Image (cartoon, rainbow, N blue to C red):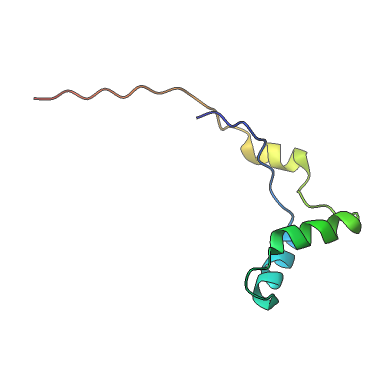
Length: 72
């Protein structure tokens, strides 16, 4: 499976803020959007450092695999 969108990991602070929002907000509130906007306005990082994310992915490879099965 090929990834079409780069998947970055959110910072711990961002994750906590979203979870706190979910615990306190009214039903139907899009906490992810609210927290993203507030982090952007405050110039706070939303994603972890890309180099750190790349180190976590080091050693993982993507391979095409074909599976065969023999029927008796």
